[in-house]
Length: 170
Image (cartoon, rainbow, N blue to C red; front, side):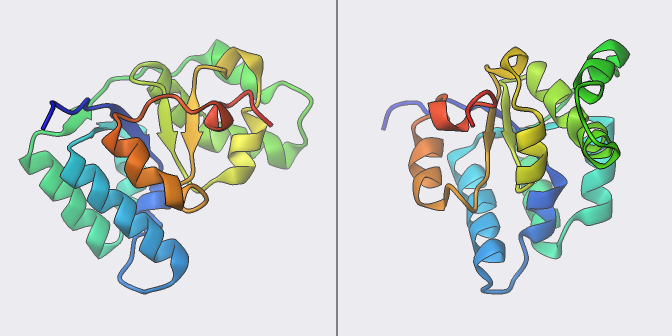
């Protein structure tokens, strides 16, 4: 088998929280996604903010998954400085106070993606919509539940850019 491309994925806490033992479609899809990421050997990005979110929201399954990723040396710890200007630009657009709070809650995912392979894996569709700006058109934001039928193949192919998952796509 040919060497697989190992991408750096920014995995939101929404995914590690949802990946539980139940057969609920969201739990099942996120658990399967984490399993594929482990088996295919893509790497995951951890920043201080991401680590803290994961610690607060992880399930037992995602905790075991993360330990397995560390054991395989597939966790890349990045120091991503807070970019106050970028955060102001993203939250200063024509947003309601609730939308502004949502942008500021998840902007660290975008900052980490910009410092890695530009891939965010998240269930946060409302946040995704708020980041629909041309400036971020190189970021792929994939929801492993909504893209469930495509996700295994996408990961096996090296997680290439998919146009409909780009942030500037409506």
